[in-house]
Length: 289
Image (tube, rainbow, N blue to C red):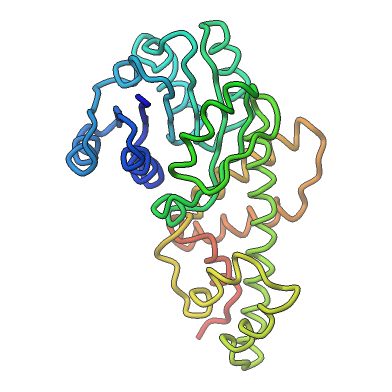
């Protein structure tokens, strides 16, 4: 299939690479052209100066950019992807954005005879590199069924959860759950270290029971070792939690723990840890040495 990929950042670069490895013809666009040229030198395909040029003749256009404003920039206007897409083509957005912008762009896509899927991903940089992401989609069913086999090139699960906007709402649920889990794990580790316990052995023991989680399995050891120079950045998590709280303000949901943890992440940013992994919450709990 002929596809395009817009946005070759930490996540998009390997995601587009998996599409090329799966045998698809991939045209890419990136705001920094040198990164697009590096991608084509590694994976083949072609690079384009604008999203519209990348999207020309593509059956599916994937995107993974920064936030709502970035997504509007790469879709709308004469240089945006929508302008280059053929009628019936699918725009598959993997950015984490507001549900509001997903619905807005889905409506604009329909007006132009296009299809729009909001498909934010979970699994972080490691999941993108391994092609093991989880994709939560809001889409019309027919468009989803056409795009799902292609997206499985970079994902282990691609699930439709409802109409446009539903994927972004599901990603918010994901981030709300993670915030509470990471804070609980941070408190447990800090408590155990203050008590003088052998924390690697403690996590090995309790990881066989009800306390087990992905965060414990994949971040527990590095939290104990005070290592955070990898993974999903605090800056990104605060962006995502901001989306969650804005949506809660619209739908009336209460997010007391998410709001609290967002404040703790602000403390981490103040410590200079905006690019640290989200598991760095444990650092603000440790007693000064």
